[in-house]
Length: 257
Image (cartoon, rainbow, N blue to C red):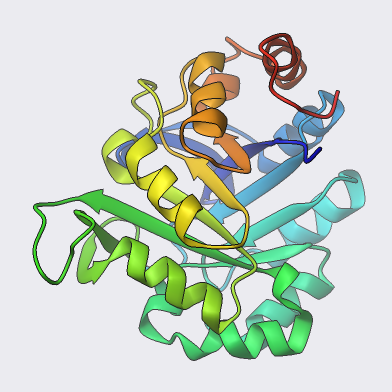
């Protein structure tokens, strides 16, 4: 039986973990490496680091942070933000990251997914997909539009169609973040999660909106996700990673304890 994964997201700005609502109103949470170590000890399956302003500021990801994390954390982790080329991917992987998440770059230069998969294997290539609910049109039949640059630039692309194309190009996993539910802790956007999970043959990570353990269970059972990403739930101290996983197990959700 395949086990569902719990992933903690660490959004990093100016060397600090920050958390907002719908990509805005961010507040300081703590040191990224120290938090990564804490969550690792508490039993999280994977970590994701997003340098949330790197692309907008036209700079590369913080390689020193990646190196320090790799020294102190011994679970898989991926990094995103500030990746502008296959060479940047190589630097992040050599620094110790297990995977690289491509979002804006992949939309603007889809060939990077193919090039990255050829160079490092598709298991290292994660598509970060930010989706926003919009009216259904012939161009966006799913009713969910791809948005890039931290939610600031709508692309007129259908989210489901882009997910399928990205997998064809080489993405080995999709981290789907629903902007409409991000940070509000009222549950994941299950409709688009299920649509994309059912449309592709690679793991899909549900992201954006977790507030209770039931929300994670819903992402697995109703959204058909392979993993669930949390941030505010654990950053607030209200939940622990081990507590979440034990609650999921009691609900009949297969997880690694």
